[in-house]
Image 1: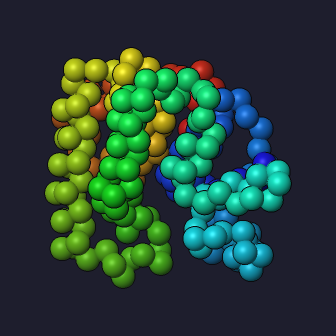
Image 2 (image 1 turned 45 degrees about the vertical axis):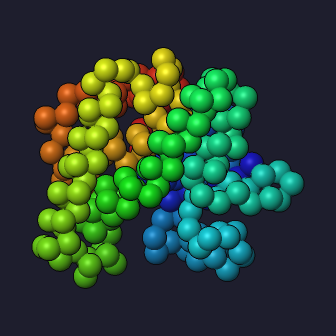
Image 3 (image 1 turned 180 degrees about the vertical axis):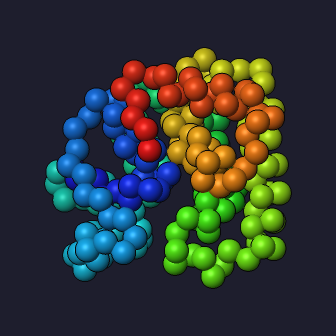
Length: 199
């Protein structure tokens, strides 16, 4: 398999993290913004939705979208609950990550760190994202106040999915993590998993 991965992206990172935790080998092609590798991937039609990550299977099938790749790789592993209700709850968190969490937490970090996004980083937009993001992180904090993992009694794809941007929300997005002890503890538990690799 070949993984087209943006090194600085939380979406790409969650795929790399699952691969590492599963001990799966993959050839990685880094396609960071502005790189020749990214231009080549676009020119060769390797990015069906024009962004990384994309997992290229051995038969040539291209799988785009980070959470779809997680679902493919996670099938028949301990990271997908056997119980159908727990599985649906896991997917619920993964959908929430893409339609609520990622568009705020990741976007604020991108505006602060990617030069080509600087024109969008107005004080008003950064302030709005900060307020929205703190509420999103508080939602996770409240949920994790009574449990170790987002779903069930073990880490699932939901945890890896949301860890991608949450663990760097303070350092890259400027969010206040100090008053979120349960969320920080959850990050520590994921970082302690055998095979863990950092961003």
